[in-house]
Figure (cartoon, rainbow, N blue to C red):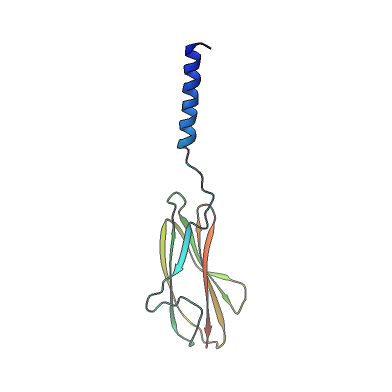
Length: 138
């Protein structure tokens, strides 16, 4: 081989090596990069509990994702009463890496009734992170 051919081959190999090394590795994870937690400060309900009928309730959540290019796009709260079908009580479209929401409501008056609340955030890839809690009316 002549010197020009060797130099061209060497240049091609060097270019391919640089391109290979500089490529960003795609991370397939999505769920483990999102987090949703209940707020635990004074006045917040953050775990399963039994409360008196007519009690004012506040449940707060904080959610975040580690990837700015895969932001949170949706927040949803669903409620199931006495193990019945869940229905959406609040939903919001998002476009951010961090989100907070405080859900305020007043318990009904049916003693023994259970309310399971599920809080869900969804990222751009369609992965979900959820937290749930149950409130029983005494």
